[in-house]
Length: 75
Image (cartoon, rainbow, N blue to C red):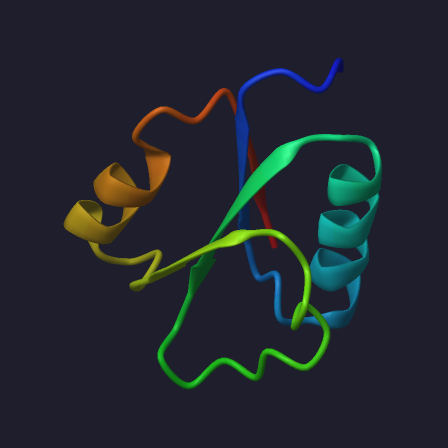
């Protein structure tokens, strides 16, 4: 993958997801996170990412989060 376009990461507030987000940002990717309102943000705080809130079980949440996305990572 080359750093073009936008990546979506679900589960970004967890251990694996947050480390992936760090790597993507370090490699120059634009990153959007799909988070629950109750997600803890300590692992991604301060990173240049776009935060969106919703539920992966909700079609509208997924549709909105995926708009304009070229790569998606689901954890």
